[in-house]
Length: 382
Length: 122
Image (cartoon, rainbow over all chains, first blue to last red):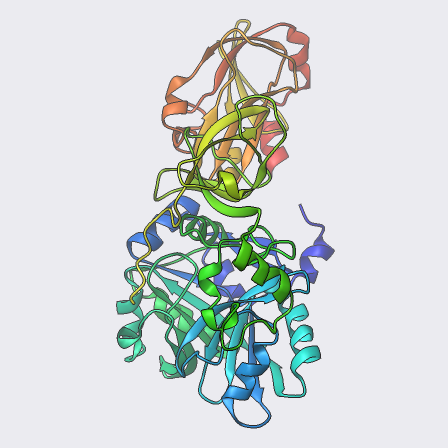
């Protein structure tokens, strides 16, 4: 239990009162008082998102505008490429791309979304990293860009097969958007930034809305009987089934994008032989991992039994004896699979699909297998 | 005649003679959320009071269930292993975990009756 003073020092999102009125069970997360679940519970919230639509408050995440001082968007894109191994120049207006801030060792400082809004770039970063990310951007890009942390905006995710029709009632352009389209749109008459993306593996949207209008937008969406409020508990089980990384757990300052099996997120133009190869922090190590391979790799894991294998469980090659070969970085129960799922790091030589391994749980070695991710097929509208 | 007592760790004991049926309380299941996995002690295992006896896992987290008294496990509930959601649906009934033969009845002295447990969770 938190002492009252600790509780009061927590920040609240513009939807705090709504969470409380909906019966949300509030817990501290990344310095915010956030709903971990509502009365429906994690299991039902998870299944409802995959079956209909879920509304998530992700206003704790950082929203940052990167405006080129020259007025040319390409200058902002080139500047940001100094901090990420992604090709930002080729992100077309109205499109968004997944990226990582890397450090000098090739590790990951944070992962983020970068959208091209025509005259500026719009970034969404993790809550726990947003202050550090802002400082990092200011230190590196202030000569070229005006960096603006948009703390006066809320962020609402609407996810699941019912998301499109629910949002279409408020935003006429929503149905014509494709996965990773992003831009300013009117929704419910409000000045929103809408992207067709999310963190569940489902089709869906993330809607940035002025803080003062957030509750009205959320309530309007929740009037739709298909849409239920979803807490952080189900957000975690949904992203785990979707095989998506959680910063600070599955990726951190010690894991390179190659070790993290995120090669797909690094475009050829930034790799060895590319038109703008290297030039980001840790390029030597990251490109060496691309060229020569890395010694460990993030993989999906499916336990044979029913017992969840959770974060921190050590992985072994054999049912008894031997040193640990790796560690689980995220794990739990997948409600849609009705089975436990996990991900973790193993030596590359033991990362092939189907490789039999063991996880130590409460002193017992439980058998599991390296498995393909996502665990649940994604339903993005490409 | 059945006597029901409670521990501060939110377990209940329904005692008939020298055998206690053990489970977790309605308050405990509501705090845990949807139970997806239950692991029970083996029949015949001798438990010491306070020892981790069973495991109950929700989507979010794993929790230990401690032996409320010292004694031998004389029966376990196979239904709750097959259908962990019984812990949520009927925690004081079909969701029981195991039965233990109480070695020393004086250990019951430290447990709460229903009124004391209600005050404990208030």
